[in-house]
Length: 187
Ligand SMILES: N[C@@H](CCC(=O)N[C@@H](CSCO)C(=O)NCC(=O)O)C(=O)O
Ligand SMILES: [Zn+2]
Ligand SMILES: [Zn+2]
Image (tube, rainbow, N blue to C red; front, side, top):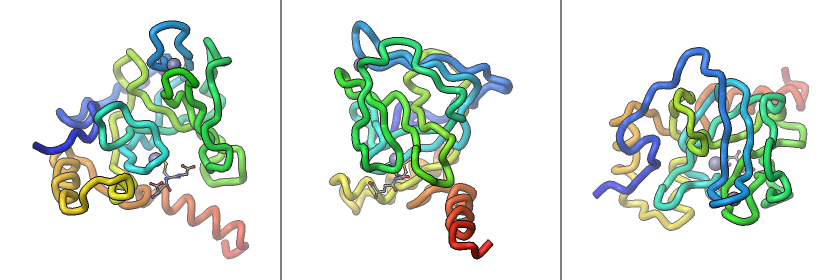
């Protein structure tokens, strides 16, 4: 049986809604849930196989999108949040009790500074942008996934219409490279 990639992907994608107003994300605690309110939809939503993004139990991939920081606010139980790795590029603010990542923020100079990384599956609302591609696919091997089963993983993504990459998508890689070129004054 093919491994579960992610609940939002395994049975095919559900297309997002036009002019979606946003909604609330909740951690997995039974009580005193951390609540984050998002204004509007996410962009560049994607499956991510990297070792740092939060994945639901049993899933091989995370699903993570970006949203302008000004559209993100913690609206309940902020005291339960902690930054997991203060040295990471993306500072992942996670619930100390259940471990769910509520938002990831970039504070250093970076092409994606100003965008927060969020997991829309933490919301009860329907209409979030569906995943657009799969990123860091080969990274699941670093976490112990058998390399000889990677064809199955990539075929499964293709079967739901998602392109697979071993870094980010071409537009996002171009944005990172443009940022570097500007820093080096080559552009
Ligand atoms: N093989 C590594 C790759 C990690 C990686 O570069 N992850 C990306 C994508 S995270 C969401 O798209 C990244 O930008 N990481 C910076 C950070 O996480 O702070 C691995 O698996 O760890
Ligand atoms: Zn929690
Ligand atoms: Zn990731």
